[in-house]
Length: 80
Image (cartoon, rainbow, N blue to C red; front, top):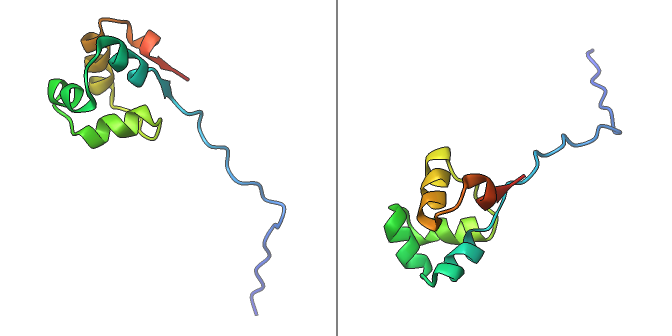
Protein backbone atom coordinates (compact mmCIF):
# COMPACT_ATOMS: atom_id res chain seq x y z
CA UNK A 1 0.00 0.00 0.00
CA UNK A 2 1.33 3.44 -0.95
CA UNK A 3 1.13 6.07 1.76
CA UNK A 4 1.10 9.73 0.89
CA UNK A 5 2.40 12.26 3.35
CA UNK A 6 1.61 15.93 3.22
CA UNK A 7 3.69 18.64 4.79
CA UNK A 8 1.18 20.66 6.79
CA UNK A 9 3.72 23.40 7.32
CA UNK A 10 4.03 24.19 3.63
CA UNK A 11 3.66 27.89 3.10
CA UNK A 12 1.85 29.33 0.16
CA UNK A 13 4.07 30.54 -2.65
CA UNK A 14 4.82 34.23 -2.41
CA UNK A 15 2.79 36.27 -4.82
CA UNK A 16 4.65 38.62 -7.12
CA UNK A 17 4.66 42.27 -6.17
CA UNK A 18 1.66 44.13 -7.46
CA UNK A 19 2.19 46.70 -10.16
CA UNK A 20 0.78 49.99 -8.87
CA UNK A 21 -0.31 52.75 -11.22
CA UNK A 22 -1.44 56.36 -11.26
CA UNK A 23 -3.98 56.01 -14.07
CA UNK A 24 -6.92 57.45 -12.13
CA UNK A 25 -4.87 60.38 -10.85
CA UNK A 26 -3.58 61.21 -14.33
CA UNK A 27 -6.99 60.79 -15.94
CA UNK A 28 -8.63 63.14 -13.45
CA UNK A 29 -5.84 65.67 -13.91
CA UNK A 30 -6.55 65.65 -17.68
CA UNK A 31 -10.29 65.93 -16.91
CA UNK A 32 -11.34 63.02 -19.11
CA UNK A 33 -13.83 60.29 -18.31
CA UNK A 34 -13.12 56.58 -18.17
CA UNK A 35 -15.14 56.16 -21.35
CA UNK A 36 -13.13 58.85 -23.17
CA UNK A 37 -9.83 57.31 -22.08
CA UNK A 38 -11.02 53.88 -23.20
CA UNK A 39 -11.93 55.28 -26.64
CA UNK A 40 -8.55 57.01 -26.98
CA UNK A 41 -6.69 53.81 -26.09
CA UNK A 42 -8.95 51.41 -27.99
CA UNK A 43 -9.90 49.37 -24.92
CA UNK A 44 -13.12 48.89 -22.97
CA UNK A 45 -14.23 51.03 -20.06
CA UNK A 46 -14.02 47.88 -17.93
CA UNK A 47 -10.29 47.72 -18.68
CA UNK A 48 -9.86 51.28 -17.43
CA UNK A 49 -11.86 50.47 -14.29
CA UNK A 50 -9.71 47.38 -13.61
CA UNK A 51 -6.54 49.42 -14.11
CA UNK A 52 -7.70 52.13 -11.73
CA UNK A 53 -8.66 49.56 -9.08
CA UNK A 54 -5.19 47.99 -9.40
CA UNK A 55 -6.79 44.68 -10.48
CA UNK A 56 -5.19 44.54 -13.93
CA UNK A 57 -1.59 44.87 -15.07
CA UNK A 58 -1.54 46.17 -18.64
CA UNK A 59 0.53 44.81 -21.48
CA UNK A 60 3.67 46.73 -22.34
CA UNK A 61 1.93 48.12 -25.41
CA UNK A 62 -0.99 49.46 -23.37
CA UNK A 63 1.34 50.84 -20.69
CA UNK A 64 3.27 52.77 -23.33
CA UNK A 65 0.06 54.11 -24.90
CA UNK A 66 -1.18 55.23 -21.47
CA UNK A 67 2.08 57.07 -20.76
CA UNK A 68 1.95 58.74 -24.17
CA UNK A 69 -1.68 59.75 -23.63
CA UNK A 70 -0.80 61.39 -20.31
CA UNK A 71 2.48 62.80 -21.70
CA UNK A 72 4.56 61.26 -18.91
CA UNK A 73 7.24 58.59 -18.65
CA UNK A 74 5.98 55.06 -18.16
CA UNK A 75 8.17 54.88 -15.02
CA UNK A 76 6.18 57.78 -13.57
CA UNK A 77 2.88 56.07 -14.30
CA UNK A 78 3.74 52.63 -12.87
CA UNK A 79 5.54 51.48 -9.72
CA UNK A 80 6.33 48.01 -8.40
